[in-house]
Image 1 (cartoon, protein in one colour):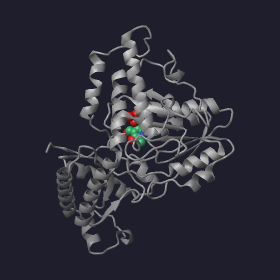
Image 2: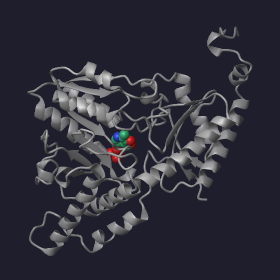
Image 3: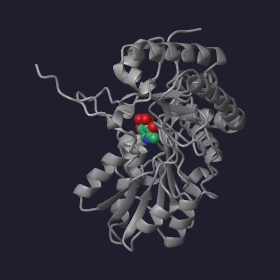
Length: 406
Ligand SMILES: Cc1ncc(COP(=O)(O)O)c(C=O)c1O
């Protein structure tokens, strides 16, 4: 077993060796520019890109012509939201999104607000889910775009995208969905799900980093975007810049593998995740699941361990690579905006850990991680007078705390 055990598959995934193998010739042998029309080097590169486009489209149920290649989800989100807002601003200036979206969406929305757009930030329910009714109630005659993630990156909760998509199409409003965590993990079909734009990143599906996709619907309706990058007019004018051919080849291969193995992998991941969950919940008390038991990714588990501080827990399990709900990037140790939007109390938000299993996770690794986590939580709780009180059945919410008089 290689330590630390990697259980952070929502942050990124290792490249599948089959993906690397497919990419290699495109660095040293077929290194042409896919836009070079006059020689064999260019043709070989273009052919490879078009093959990848087909592999990507097949994963999404899309037409290859609807695939715009980008550097990743962040760029795709910028292009989708800013590009649509600019294109359709004559029609209206209202956008609907959710408080639990990834920062890439939230920050683009903030930017658009500064440009005069109005954004409604729906509050998800306690499990992190937005309902069809909420979207219906927020729609206005001047709404041009609904931007909702398919699967949440922290808690794995799935939004009812198909229902929301049908509603948007009925009302003539565009639906963009951030499928960075969903694509390749759960079935996605842009036709059946009525999605107009969708993004994904290669590195979340065992492909390379720095390459991604924006799916842009071409028919019923035909979505038009204002390009956010000016230049040579690549990608049907929507995204200029020489194509990252090896990266795109890798992304195509990753999509093909994800499509072929989706069902078996989802089943295997769910079994591992359920095993981890069962062990944690049966061997520890005062643990809370953050997310939705029914509507969630097969490979995500987000748990709060009451009476334990997330950062201390992370330090206590240094042989396990996971993420905590408190954003350690910020000096203030602010709890995650997702858990806050879900109304998870401050204490529980600070004690949350996200476990992500994936293609290369083994049962042995999950058991090792479970042993480590369970032992560390028990150890930390031994030092907690609050835990002792809770065990005695004292409801801590009713306790009147007194400041020491000295
Ligand atoms: C849901 C979601 N959206 C967007 C992104 C941004 O992806 P990237 O950093 O590859 O651009 C991520 C990555 O963390 C994500 O999980």
